[in-house]
Amino acid sequence: MVMRSSETNMENNRIQILKEILLDLHHGASPESVQELFNQHFKGVSALEISMMEHELMASEDGVTFEDVMSLCNVHANLFKGVIADVEVADADQEGHPVYVFKQENLALRSAILRIRRIIENISKPENEPFKSDLLNGLKHQMTLLGQFHNHYTRKEKLFFPIMERYGHDSPPKVMWGVDDDIRKLFRDAESKLQELSNSDADIEEFSKAFETFSEEFEAMIFKEKAILLMILLETSTQDDWLSIAEESDAYGYAIIKKTG
Image (tube, rainbow, N blue to C red; front, side):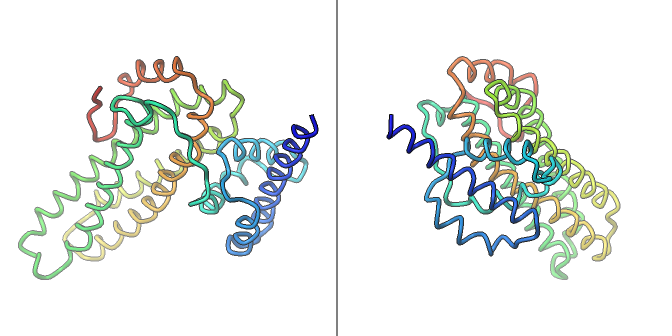
């Protein structure tokens, strides 16, 4: 009984420290200033603790709103990089399992981003002038492929989020959905710049800026999906939950990859 009480106190203390770190960030502290404190107290932190922390933040009387947590999403995700404890679940890395499919999509989407960056880098080089039209067509093709992330996000929001909410983890989906919508808008902005492209380097530069603004947020979301979203799902979901997700996934489609298994 004493041991259980001690463990509970330790858990509550860790959540309180996490909460204080985010409140410090909310009140203007730099990520660098809280990193050392975080490292002192956490060798591994579970995604469930992050979820509980977000619950407390938005339910507290400290003045932290949903919008604040959403704006801090990237900051606190960066703090957890490299220290979040992984959860291993049998079959999760088997072809056809929703987690495997989800991770493969992110690998494919990340590859499309890298290919777009290479095209941007090469399209304005004088020696590539004869191939500029081909490079531009390649750029448009890769953007079309990357745009399939909409399927990835919709499947996440329609199938993953309801299960998280069913088990009481409604804060991460709410925050993540808000960031998803921001990312969708940034992609539309980049698409708009792509449509405006002429043969001038200035237009290429405008597209490049819009694309990097999008990709920075998009790549941060890839991390959050791996380290927070999937970890919560792996810790809480049952085999029946995964079967349900697998059965319903085809209706929403996939991003770049073809589902196997």
